[in-house]
Amino acid sequence: MIFSFLVIAFVGVIPSIYSLVRTWGDMLALIDNLQFSLPLLSATIKLVVIQWKKPDLTLALNMISNDWLKAKSEKEQRVMIKYARRARTILIFGYVFMIIADCLLIFPPCFGLSLRYITNITDPDKILPLQTYYLYDKDQSPYYELTFTAQALLSIISALCYTGVSNLLGLLVFHLCGQMENLKERLINMRQRKTFYDDLTFIVEDHIRLIKYYNIIEDTFTFLLFTLLLYFGTLFCLQGFLIVTKLCIIQVQLQNSRISEKVLTEGREMSMIRLIFLICIVLNVSGHMCLHCLVGEILVAQCDNIYYAAYDYKWYTLEPEKARTLILIMIRANKPLHITAGKIFPMTMAMFCNLIKTSSGYISVLLARQSLQN
Image (cartoon, rainbow, N blue to C red; front, side, top):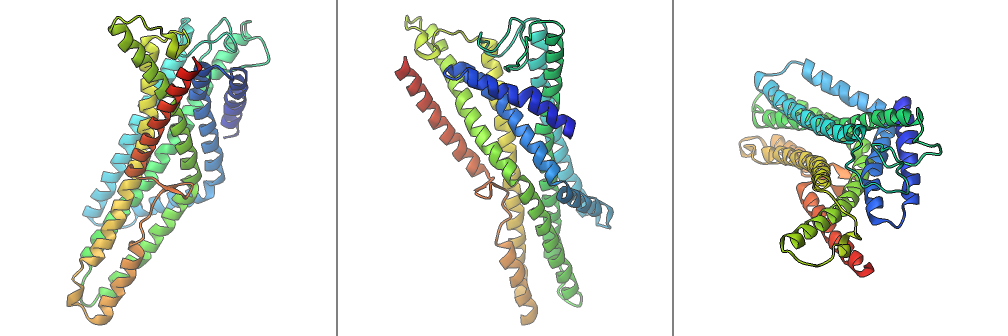
């Protein structure tokens, strides 16, 4: 953990922020810098928070282990396997996309090519994967080879931290959803005669245990989700500005218009390959954000199912004292278990749609500002 933190901080975050200061005023250089410095900063925060919350996460993982080891029915086991496979599928896709991104970032500079926006302010004669500024001459050998190797290692470590923490959140929440679904089935099939109170006691204790499990997830990831929210909104807005700019240029060229491209790009060319690279980055970041919101939406739905299972129970066939005990479950299940960003914004699909709408509005503001400057 210490090695990973030192590599990300001193090879990536600090040099990229210093490069950001030196390129201040150049819109394209700033956006190119932020599309790498923001993920590096996010990976650093994730690494620190996960290490800080390690005792709580260990407790949560032990609860998962106990759930798999304890006796259960075949139906309950199928439910747990179903949610575990969903988490594994997301993990596979997440790492595949990150491997593709690392390959596009590392291998083209080996042949003198780059998908970044190259500027003479911070980029040397020999191209590096990231836009950074170091205090030594990077063009000289062996400094260039050592810097290139360090940045390649940096991209791999940061990708593991960035994607691994997101996959850990998906694993924890999907396991909670599976336990909630099993709890709902126990509530529906609860016996109404001799063992009613025993079954109800087990359900209440298990529900309280799952709420404590949820509190661990919420306390661990709420700040990380808040930083992800800010990071996604900023990056979506800036890269959306570049993509819309290039699409406008293509439209003008197809119409054989004589309008100068300087209105939007200040005379700088953007290749079609770089446009595709930017679109892939936007889709990758949007996919991560959408998955977080989708997982939160599934969890809210499972909490609602427990409430409706208690509500739809045949309480009218019970004795009054037994029927009143169901009210306790209904009151507690009526409060959904939201995964939140900073304990403010619930991670749901509605929030994701509102975030996309707001970020898209800021893209038009940037376009208008760029046009006025020119």
